[in-house]
Amino acid sequence: MNVKLLERVSRRDALKLGTLGALSAAGAGAVAACAPSTVAPVAAPAPTTAHYAHPSDAMFMPGLSGEIDIAKNGFNPSDILADFDYGTVSALPNGQTLREYRINAVVKNLEVAPGIEFEAWTYNGRVPGPTLRCTEGDHIRIEFVNGSPHPHTMHFHGVHPAGMDGVYEPVPVGGRFVYEFDAEPFGVHQYHCHVMPLAEHIARGLYGAFIVDPKQGWKKAEHEFVMVQNGVDIDFDGENDFYAVNFIPFWFDKHPIQIKRDALVRVFLVNMLEYDPINSFHLHANFFHYYPTGTLLTPSEYTDTIIQAQAQRGMLEFTYKYAGKYMFHAHKTEFAELGWTGAFEVG
Ligand code: CU
Ligand code: CU
Image 1 (cartoon, rainbow, N blue to C red):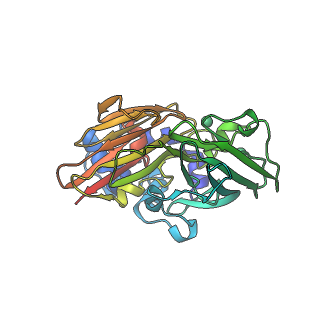
Image 2 (cartoon, helix red, strand yellow):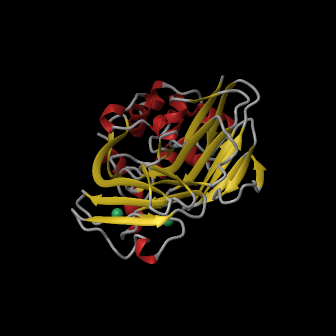
Image 3 (cartoon, helix red, strand yellow):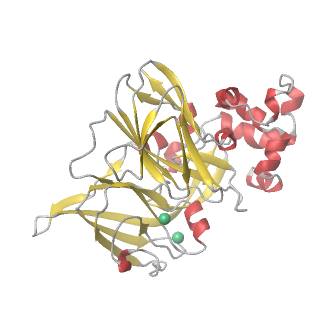
């Protein structure tokens, strides 16, 4: 279905038509409750069969009330939270740690909502790509193979020589390139393709987190999670139709993240959203320490909401003192209603 239908009604049309009332029923009700928006449900009469019979409702309801085929997609957003790729580790003659990674660019159809597929351009078949993790001063070597039908690169944020910047050396179809540099500075970074048209290469899925731990390590945390914020432009019109962390809309709403009470939780949060200028993260019933870009050992803010523009990222640390279920979501509530919403389950 779906792609055709979606082409006829843009996401903002969908908002006006009140299709998102249906979303509330599908699991985002608490968003509407916490931050009433201009969307219909607040003032509208109780939903009736007639209301849901509107043709535009049919676009979203089936998609968001069921489950997607995780096995077919080949990755689970919950697993991505704590899936850190430390590479193949060895020592160079000078004693420096060498970490070697292998990344393939491949096209893959991914189911983003039940029945709705998206032709993603991926690093290693997943979106976001592997979370590459190392320690500052390590020597990083990434063998990049382009197994897709378009030229791509890997552009890392960080300090490195010009030839390793992944901008002026597009890797042709079937080509190979080895990126090699010393990891600095420590912090929460990212990598992404840098081939034109840039917004599309990123929006299609060619991005991932790159975490450089400080030599002395971070404060010990019981839970460490990677969340990469993204949009999904199903109909390729340069406007996002869904929003998420770790790619699948509403995933963490349906599958809350289990954490322990009184345990220190660290979130590496990266904003790779294209087409919309600003993203945000709001944690419910709690506050967190925020380390912008993760490049300093002391936090700059104690808050419950932060804003990230494109490519901004940072580290959050918090502890829940009461058991229960707590939402986290974009406080740009339109994004929350279109998928960027989740929950922590504190046990
Ligand atoms: Cu590309
Ligand atoms: Cu960038």
